[in-house]
Structure formats: C-alpha cells, structure tokens
Length: 344
Image (cartoon, rainbow, N blue to C red; front, side):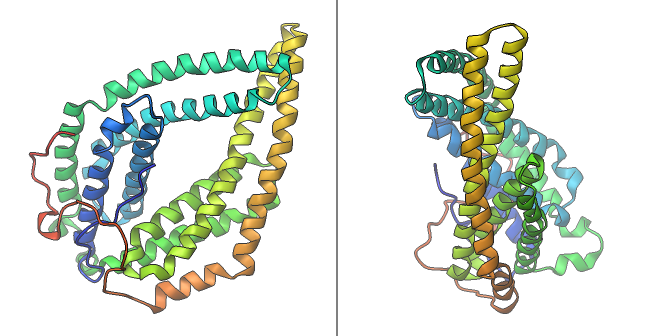
C-alpha cells in the first residue's frame, strides 16, 4: 500500500484556506495517480492503495468541511464517494477471498468444501466489482473530475465569499489543532463501547473514529514535527485491533445467516460446516476484543490523550520535519488549480 505523502508547500502559520487548497488538491492527485495500479488485477494491493488514498482524501474533506462553502463541493464529493465505494467493493472481495483461502488449509474436509463454494461466489462478485471500477475510474472521467474538483475547491475556499469575515483570519495550524482535538474526542467518547463487547456497531464506529484520528495526525504532523508521530502509531495499532474485531463480526453475521438458511433447507452437512465456522470466529473475536481492549487501556495508562493535547497547545513548529517524504503536489502559488489537468 502506498504511504501518504506530505503535501509540499504547507505553511502552518499562513491562512488556513491556502493550506486547505494545497491538501485537498494534493490528496486528489495522490489518489488519481494510483489509477493504473488499481486496474492491475494481478496485484490486489493496487486497488487497496487507491482505496486508501480515496479515504484519506474524503477524511481531509470531512475535516475541512466546517471551514468551506459546502455547496460548492457537493457534486465532486459524491463522485469521489462513488470512486471510494467502487474500489471498496473490490477490496472487500479480495480480503474475503484471501481470508477464506487461508482458513481452508486448516479446516475439516466438509468445511473446506463449503469454503470452496464461498470463495467461488466471491470471485464472481469480485469480477463484477472490477468491471464497475473500470467504468468508474476511466482516464477521461478522472481528468474531468480533476478539473471540476479544482474549480470547486477554489470556490469553496474563496475568503471573499465567506461569512463571517473573521473566519478568513484563521491560520492553518488553528484548523489543524481543532481537527485533531475533535477526532481525539470522538475516539474517547466511543471508547466506552469496549466495555459493551457484544454491541457491534459502537465498536465499528470506534474503529472508524480511530482511523480518522490517525489520518488527521499524519496529515497535520508537520505543524508539530515528529513529536506527534508516536501517537499516530499508537492509534494505528488500536485501529488494527478494532479492524480485526470488525472483520470477525462481519464473518459471524454472515456465517450465522448461512447456518440458519441451511437448517431451514434441511441441509445438515452445510449447517454443520457453518456452525463450525461460526464457532471458530467467535473464538477469534474474543482474542481480537482482548487485544483492542488492551490497546486502549495502554493508551489510558500512558495518559496519551493528555500528552497529545499538551503538544498541540504548547508547541508550534514552523520548520519542516526531517526525513519525511514529500509529494509532487502543487506549490502554494499553484494552489488554485487550472481547469486543464493532465490525464491519469
């Protein structure tokens, strides 16, 4: 998976709208350049990389939305969501197939036969999803979206059209601090879900909140330097545990439905196989839950929320951190995108 690149030309103490334009345009181009990789079916990581890039873009748009003219971005936001959804459908099938193939090697013969059938169904669904991706991310469509998205960003960040006028004096670092603090508060509020382990949806929401917090820290880390990177790693570890937990919940729901359907159809072999799979993932889920709970307890014991807040409010760096990759994105002078964008 391609790592997110730093956006070139960010001045944390300049006007927020300048940085916002640079980030959103840079994140879009980062996603668009991964088109060829995403269409290489021999390497499933290509789809994953473009999907993650689309998530980073959408997360940044969500972070900045309170500081933008929302109406200007509605059309582009929908198209970007469609791209993310199409890529996500392929990625979900890729992950599911790999998981089932790995599991098949360690299951009884009757269960392996059921897994073979499920894998074949997923392959067919993946083929259909791939065709949708090909239609969704054509070179021409991405070129057109690049143009309209640039125009929308310029309109959405035009300080002359924003009210109240005082908002135009916001610095980029002010927005960065507010966003990270908001994302941190979301994770903290949802952490109580770990004490209700059978309630699936709040745990899923906590995973998403953790992902958004990590994206925000990584996006804005240049305003505080490397001091904030350990927090991003700690959140990434938590997100991973919660992600594995969510995967188990999805499998449990799926296999439970299959088991019930098999019983209704009087298919005892199928029903037994799905019962075995259901039992297996219930045990795995317990381990994942323990890992997620331990990760959050470590966060609390080490008082990382307070430490992160202290850094955000006490330290404001103006220099760029060393040894970090830079993007080939636009400079501050070219933040306002021209309508002619190169094809991906």
